[in-house]
Image (cartoon, rainbow, N blue to C red):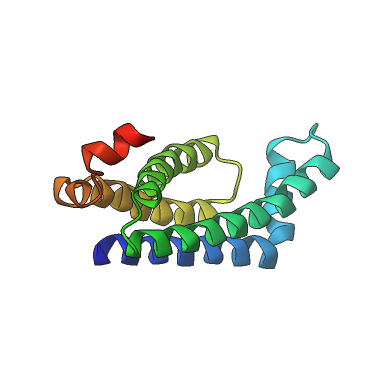
Length: 142
């Protein structure tokens, strides 16, 4: 369990780093995106740029809530972390493949992708899964 919590916090730190880099270098990120797609609506790209850090911070709050649930043995929190880590790998991989950000930001995202893949592997270990299996009578009562 400690490994999972450490990986979640490492991923959250990576998310905060991505937010900080986007805000600090927003002009560079926008210039890169405008150069790649000159016909694109500039206002729409700027809106996407600003909503991305907000979404990352919302996910950060949810992850903190899920860590608390994991530490208290909540099977729902465990299932959500399993789902979120797998979805995160797929979504972040898709973002990297899209190439919508400069290479230096892609490198940070690739590091975060490695952390998410490690988290997905850690939460799907048989020993951890067994710790969160609900007794059959609890599952049937729902």
